[in-house]
Length: 104
Figure 1 (tube, rainbow, N blue to C red):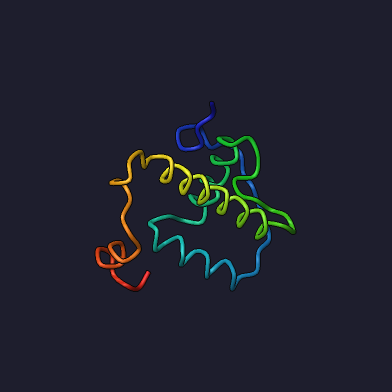
Figure 2: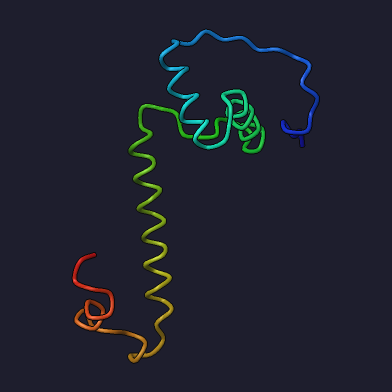
């Protein structure tokens, strides 16, 4: 697999961007210890790693992410429920709130 970090950089890429946006994203990436070029190279590497866009990009992104999050949550809840083999594995709501606090 190609590695953006170690591969020779002999090609150039130019793009037009609003100067205010450029300044803002440069500041954000600088806080992460990266340049804008580093961030673009990271985006390109992740595109190679996943074989496509490294994030969901469509009109239904919010719905898709919520659905995926709900599916993961339900799977974890089912795993937890299935892990309780004996009545003694369960705790009451009162015991749970005493152990973890009343504010979740």
